[in-house]
Length: 246
Image (cartoon, rainbow, N blue to C red):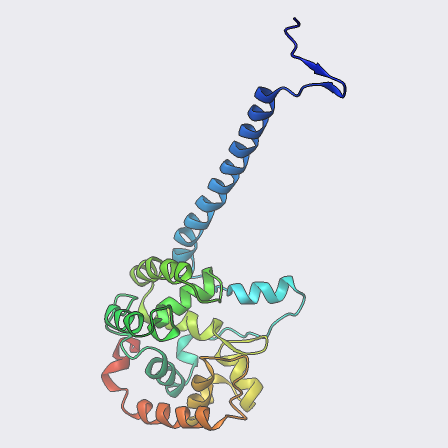
């Protein structure tokens, strides 16, 4: 009997031990690759968040627009070069507790999750939306929401409230390939963000929940109604936006 194994009419029988070893080696290679990717995904936000204190970030959607050769419109402006009405409109429509929470509005998050049983924009603070726009993907899921929370807590430790809002107002999607309030103000109202009035700011803020179909110049009835609510909230903002003062 040969030590090389039995033979058949079709040739020698395959060495099962060798095949298994090759498979194990392949799995180890893929495991190392996945571990490397996971480590980079974790470390990248930890490194970039402090860097974004001075560097102007772009969103993942902006990167996608570049990769798909669509391009985008965005003109970065400092927070002081955005009208008070625009800042107030976004805070009062998107995250009324912005000045008071640690990046996550735990009460609102618990209320929304218990009410509809799933991840929802209504539970997202401005900080959570900012880290989502900068580091994550747009679709809603428990996985993404779970990643948003620690990233938002970390960002709130590193960034001031002013810096967080400044980044958000410069990367938020406000129309097809239109990002940031400066680009939106010039596209829709032919003026810089510094010159936006209360009604114009409210119309832009009302488009934020679904900028792909909400046009500030052609608001639906629901959108127009929401913009009027936001206008009233701008007047009442007071202490809700005190953290934005120097």
